[in-house]
Image 1 (cartoon, rainbow, N blue to C red):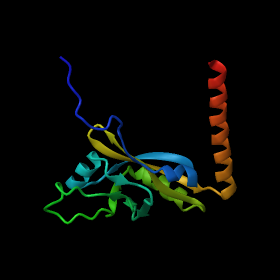
Image 2 (cartoon, rainbow, N blue to C red):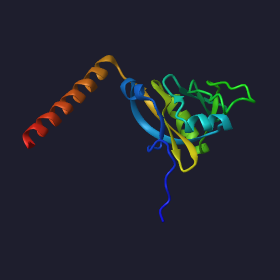
Image 3 (tube, one colour):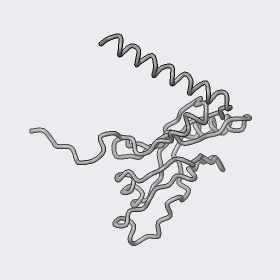
Image 4 (cartoon, rainbow, N blue to C red):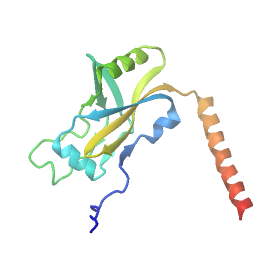
Length: 160
């Protein structure tokens, strides 16, 4: 007998920050845990999260996720006043936080969230140390993407 999977998304990804790869050069990635309330976990299971304008604040040796929007479910948050954009604590090792703080203090570096995803029954946040792209970098990235698409098209046509 095989167990049936629950009806839901097949991917472990909850939310992606698609704008990040366009706006920044990603230099180093970290996996952080996320301190959440019960209603937030239920909303994440329903896929109601956005990371568009979110960023990571480093303060007093702790990392905080600001600007992430988790839309409250009407059924799950009846007894609490839900704040969809509240500041959430990121759970990292002290060495990782020290490394991130050291890099962020250098000119041009910042720390942003890239994705929210499930790892087992825990919610993880992938954060990255990034450096802002200039306009010509963005154009070069777009040209390279277009060229790769065109190469794929040519290869596909040659194989058929």
